[in-house]
Image (cartoon, rainbow, N blue to C red; front, side):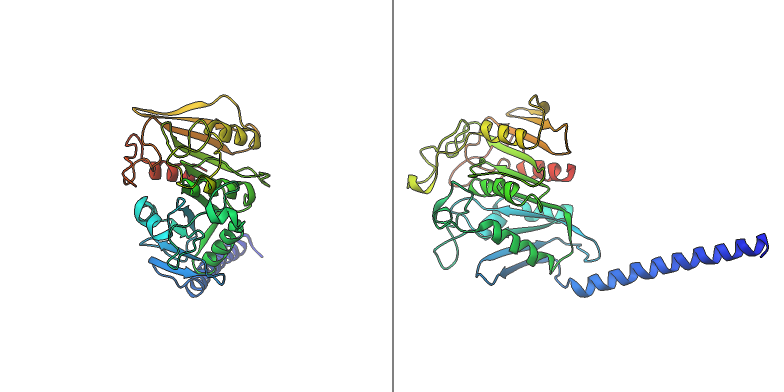
Length: 315
């Protein structure tokens, strides 16, 4: 074969490979279209256990592209519809293109309101009945993955109060799934914590929180029935626990400083995990930048939803 013939053959092989690659990509898109049939919008699902969750799929979602997944956990006494309404995650999902799920906690009421999570030492009937909420979350994620195209390397959890505590428990017991978690106004009240791999943590807390006290313990407005809560772990003890678990440096770097709030970042020298603590001076037991709940005026120094999504993206 002459040099010219070899060149022609090589060019033909190149274009054949390109055509094959294009055909394979088309086939993958077709498979995705068939396998994942859910359209953009909000969908409610009930598992075999009769437990429910809401799933919000953003406008512009395409099943041919794997999307990040955020799970948001309502606070103690809340429920999935309230969570979807109050914290801006629907709107953030539509703007940024990720999928967000709102699982519902354990409740004795038919509409599943006034629900709680078993986050270890807290809270309510979910804790008292030793509900397997980690198992439930795994079922929710498996159910979602059957219906929409999820990027398994970008699954995150966040939550308010008891829901934030639940995200800490997931970091401890489902580190094989979650890349990062972001509790707000909820400390780490797990009974044991042995993550199989590092998980990045963003913790947001108001210094004047009157429910989950910054320095530890339950405030006077935590619950009418003290037996439904616990002597909450302090913010500093929660952060120090994860500094040790993630083998992070004990000296932080100031990464946020605005009137009324600051943020310190602890980075690991052994892995890519990070721990960030963001403190607001005011706002009490509420979601910074969010709606007023039970007449609590949230801090406006930061927007927790925006900060959390930026942190998740950085991971």
